[in-house]
Image 1: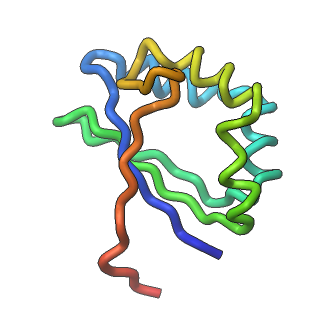
Image 2: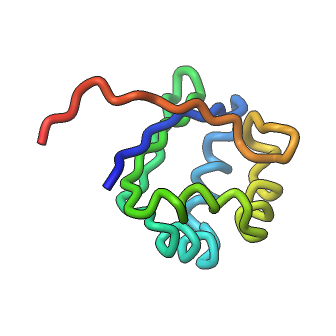
Length: 104
């Protein structure tokens, strides 16, 4: 199992809408993540900076790497693109974070 952490960037003023859309996340997205070896996935918001912090456990790195290729994920990105900073393919700009401490 690998722990993965990253940050993304929400546009100011869209905090409530971002939360609302994730509260109603599509079952197909949840299934894709679970079937791709993702567990214990959380996203936190720094309300002062609008930076989102994601952390998850990955149990299958090969399947995890294929998530961006899935049509349902691309559809989700299209749905979310108005709320956050994105790349040209509408995927969220995401910066990997490196673990410097972990208490087990």
